[in-house]
Amino acid sequence: MTTKIFLDSAAAVAPLLRAPELATRWAEPSALTEFRISGLAGHLARAVFNVERYLDADAITEPPTLDAVSYFRTAGGPDADDPQATVHRLIRERGEQDAANGPLDLADRYDAARARLAQRLADLDGDRPVLMFGRYVLTLHECLLTRLVELVVHADDLAVSLELPTPEFGDEADDMVIKTLARISRRRHGTLPVLRTLARRERASSPVSAF
Image (cartoon, rainbow, N blue to C red; front, side, top):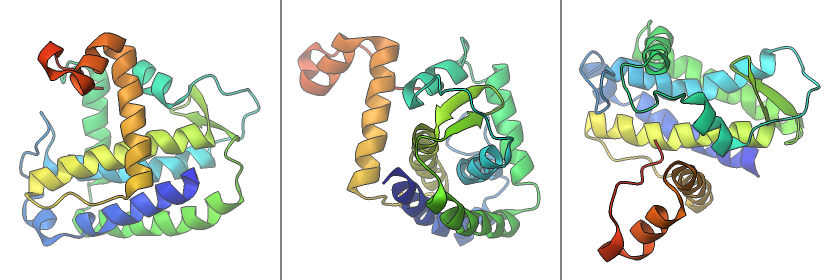
């Protein structure tokens, strides 16, 4: 199920990467701090590119050690809230690298990667260990869940940056992403702040963003 939802969500993003507004505003600042629109588009596309990169790495036999929530809490590092932190600088640089040849090239490579993954993922077990960024071991299911979160969140970032409607991903994808974000938020802020923000606005006292 996760594979289909990931691939369907990747398809929902594809028109955004071919929007005329993307080419027109390619070099402008985005809605995200320190991100140009080009780099944000590249970062969004990497949610698909990176799945291929992970699968191309040498097969591993060690058991998974993280789920999607633990991955996001670990990968951000202690300076996750600082846009100038090394991890965020590297994210922006990698996004620009993938966008280096312009919007048409990015969209073409994105669609080609989606087509290859549609065939490749069909034969893979969701429990297969996947090595992400050379150090985080997740099941394929949890890996795809992290990339689904990236697709949905950053598609909204890019759409807002271009003043376009945010793509619709469907109830299954939305439920998976919201559940994951809520779990990240709870891990980050604790149960009561999240509970009160969601259920008792008169007792909500502070932001509970996942990132």
